[in-house]
Image (tube, rainbow, N blue to C red):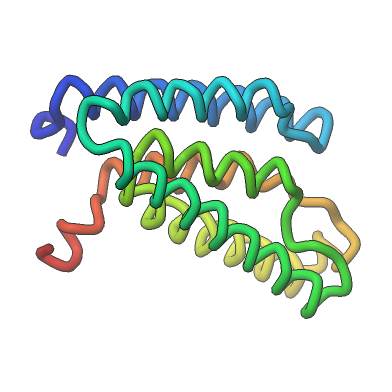
Length: 157
């Protein structure tokens, strides 16, 4: 799949993966995703969006952040605390600014994989409802999976 990507898409995905890897490392150590990292990632996304549709990337950023925010709220309803931190929500928005609409697929995959991992951990007893699970590593996995297996390859769109 990578051979069919344009130079701008390769640049976008390279920046995205670099930012997500940095966020994952920081999140694992500190339980935070720093705002300066999110702001820089979002700024690069906006600059690169000038080349192929700023409005679409802005809408994808808002949509990805909105989806993550809804999942955060669902965690509060189900578990009595937020399902993810605001850094994860903001990084999801930055993913949308950088990757455009494919970011929603990447975010879906991250939530599916992260949620499955947490569910297995809860059933297996090595996680509890109070355990903090950093979500940024799952954003990396979701982004890699979304790049390797684009939504269009699954649904033919």
